[in-house]
Image 1 (cartoon, rainbow, N blue to C red):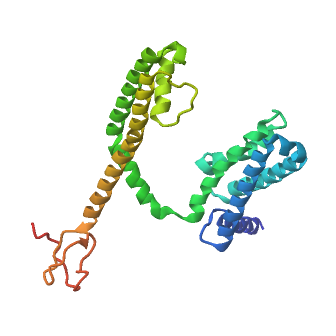
Image 2: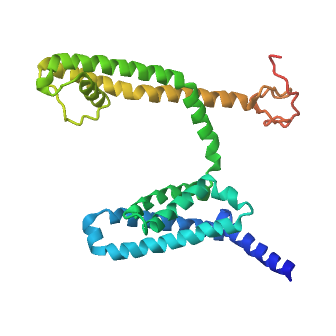
Image 3: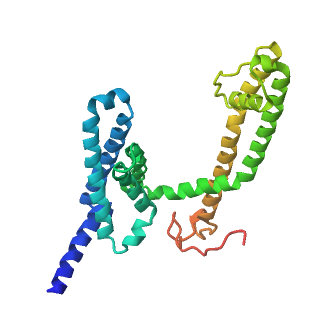
Length: 285
């Protein structure tokens, strides 16, 4: 009898696991899509709660919706723990921690007023969309980008160091030219203005008054456009190198002894053009 009970529980656990964790089955896809919709609606409810006029009119309804969402997410969280063979591994995993943090705020609202607003953190659960879309084919591209960023790190650091020096020099110069009367009351504040201007943000809280100051400001603005493009160019160049390198590595140097075709894949044993067996030797060997 005990064995039969265990088998039924195992079957139930397996069925739940396939629905919750599976992305290839219709039930699994439907579950994930419904989950994403619920997450979006719950985040929307939290955002609307911060709008005073809307919250004043529909406060009770929003609270009800929040508890409904929290209850559903709690059930889902418990089912995830129940269905997996290694519950502790899930609990302390990245998604497990996010799932737990997503449901805690409403329960904490019993003890801490206003903590329910933190429920907007459940938007992080939208990261599950990567599982639903099954975009594992893009992992290789992300690795190339990571390698490009790593290889261009030194160049970017040097570039940023030069930008910092420019900001310090220009900020100090503007402090001397404009002075406290124009709002440039200190060198740190003048450097702040230079950074804002160089990045083309332009808050407008501090503006130069003198003709020379405006001329320098114009140069800084124009320089800002070029500075923004430099890091992009550095990373793009390294990214291109990564792609060219991978393309070269993916090609076989073997030459077909019959048709003399090259650029065969590394794992190729036969010519893609005539079907002749390759000798796997380069003509330069």
